[in-house]
Image (tube, rainbow, N blue to C red):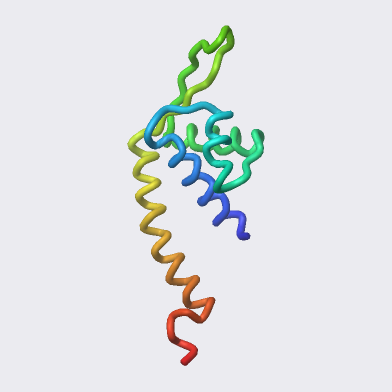
Length: 106
């Protein structure tokens, strides 16, 4: 799979995983497991990129005597999910063309 396309898919997956509630790394991996396998190193690279892009914010809180980072989606992150949904319509159309499902082979 094209790296740029995969990167966009993974970013949208991570943002969607925290769309409804703040979350932390292990829980994000667990929530995404039925859909996509993510290593911790890949997830934390994505989280850092999304934080730098202001699509999520981070807070640290104590949990069972240890500090844990919680991630919160921002308005810009929600906007990126909406953009992804719109982009996906175009990707589906391209796929149908490539797969010959658009009726152009007839």
